[in-house]
Image (tube, rainbow, N blue to C red; front, side, top):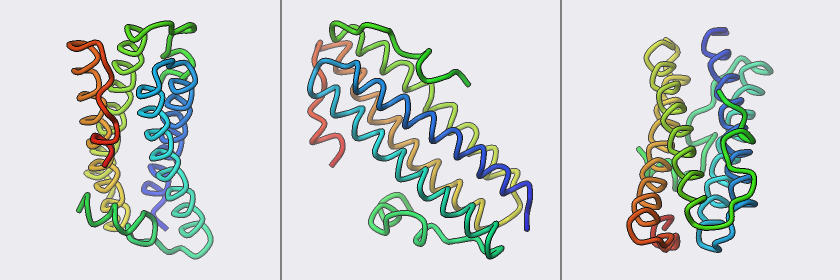
Length: 169
C-alpha cells in the first residue's frame, strides 16, 4: 500500500468536507434564490467528491486496491472532464447581494487552494491510480472555479446572479 498516496487522499477528504460545509453554509445565508441554488449545487458536487474519496480509502485500506475514476465518480462527469474553518469565511448576516460577493470571493479562494493541493499531490504521488484521481479532482475544481468566477463577474458588474441553469448545465 502506498501510504503517501493514501495520506493525500485523507487530506483531500478533509478539504472536500470543508468545501461542502462552506457551500451549505453559504446557501443557508444567501437570500437570493439564484445565489442559494449556486451554493447548493456546489455543495452537492463536493459531497459527490467526498463519497468517492471515502470509497477510495475503504478500497485501499480494505482490499489494497485503487479504484479507477469510473468506479469512483459519475461516468458522465468522467467523460466530460477527461485552512480556515468554513464558518469563519462567510459573513454572519448576509442581507444583500453585496454579501454574496464576499461569499463568492471566499469560495474562489477555497477552490484555488484545493486545486493547488491536488496539483501538488498529483505531481508528488507516484501511484498511477492516485495521480489520475487527483487529476480528475483538479479538473472538477477548475470547473467549480470557473462557475464561481462567472457568478462573481455578474454579481459585481450587473448586481444579479447569473442564471445557474445555464452555468451548471
